Amino acid sequence: MSWKNIKREGRVNFYSINMFMSRMVLYRKYRSMNFDEVVGQEHVVRSLRNAVKTGEVSHALLFAGARGIGKTSLARILARAVNCKNITNDGNPCNQCDICQAFIKQASMDLIEIDAASHRGIDDIRFLQEGASFAPVEAKKKVFIIDEVHMLTKEAFNALLKTLEEPPSHCIFILATTEINKVPETILSRCQTYYFERISVDEMMKHLIEVAEQEGVKLEEKESLMIANSVKGGMRDALGILEQLLVCSNEGKIDEGDLYKLLGVVEESVLNNIYDLMQKGKMSETISFFHNEVYRKGVEVDRLLISLEDFFRKKMLEDDFSDGKRAEKWAIVFEELTRSRQENFEIDTLNFELFVIRTISRWEKAKLIVEEPSPKEEKVVEQEQSVAVDSGVDKNDWQDKRPEQDLVDKKDVNELIKIWIDFVGKVAEQNPLLASIIRMSEARNQSGKLEISVPYVLQKRQLESNGNMDFLRQVAKQLIGKEVDIIICVNQQKSAIEQKRNMISQQIQDRVAEETGDSLKKEVETIFEGEEV
View 1: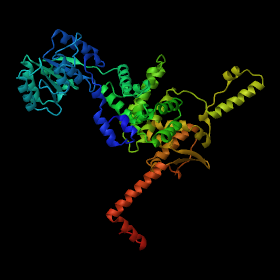
View 2: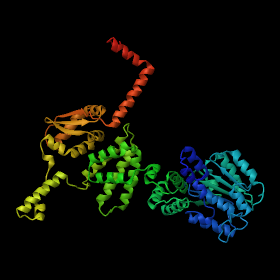
View 3: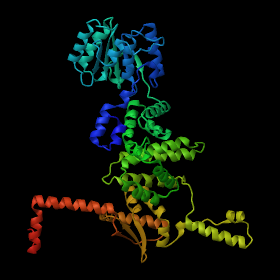
View 4: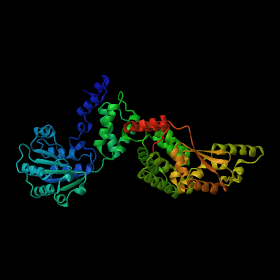
């Protein structure tokens, strides 16, 4: 049953998908069948092709490289090429003769493949040695392919070494590994080693678009680029992602949203918004955008930080480093990203909030923020410009002579609220945890007192404990030059998320109470107006 039939009949369920996947696995369906079809690895292909044409294929070869880049496929092509009855002039196997067909169907006694990840003991190698002692049944050479050879035990390696030292003339051993550092030097010295490279993004994009086209689905260049960037050079992984997209495709079209979810990355528009807000030093807006447009929509913080790291790296590569401050700005970004990803907080949103606060605070301190006048300032400027024009003063002269405003010199609570971002920045320099809490809060002038309204009771306790209030008063005094009385309250309009958390927590507590008998005990205490002694 084809995927199109499954969709046409409206039976798109897990059973149908599993059946579809089991019948058509793309990385097997489009596995390279000759040297010409191999994607990437030109240096390896060229060497092996020449060895086949000259008849000088080594008795022992080691293919080393990352997973999913063609090591096993190339080993099988080589096995057919050295045994093909009708080999082409360019060294490719014909894939039509009885030997090639037997090798392709893995029905030949002259091709033995061993997965050392599951057959890693000395008995498995002894079985291999016994098979090597017999001449080929039909082929010219008996070929042994040992995948993940680094998984063999020490004793198994010693047994394999004996075979490689004195190999039968009718045998070829092809070893493949993703961790060549775990292969003993004694084995390496007996093999011709070929290092496989990760497949380039351009080559992978081209191949993915071709495969999708053959499957009747149009894959856009942007989508192929996203897949190629996500798999780190592994074609097998890329084809696996493409296969899942084919399951989700609708009338030959792939939904970009499905691809974002499948790859576990955050949409670029979201990352762009965060980047723009941070560039302008807007801490409050950045964190609010994160909570309202990212976190509440189900995006995990770890996933966001990983996506931001890739996004910022791309932005950095597009930047101009002729200005030393640009380099300093990016250094701060990646230092704080690394720090936030390494920290593990019980409230995971704190990882992102601290990243924003620390990064913007350090940018402000180093004067790396993109200046943008507030709407209020713009209105004042427009009014003053209007006055200047009415009085016959030239606009350019007026801008040069405009007095600078110093908000730090203001002397009341209202002015402290106006420079709230400076207040948070000062707090963040010495206590990032407190800064993250007050950044999520609201500040009001309550009868001459600074009222900080936080979402949760836990945060209120945190601000009021361990001398934190004295610290906040001290920071406020540094900014406006006088003592400020600060009070902390809890905002009664809690978010839907917090309400849901409380509801779930209460359900758990009620269930525990029922199981332990605490519920009955509380009812008795209430009825008799007593207490436990």
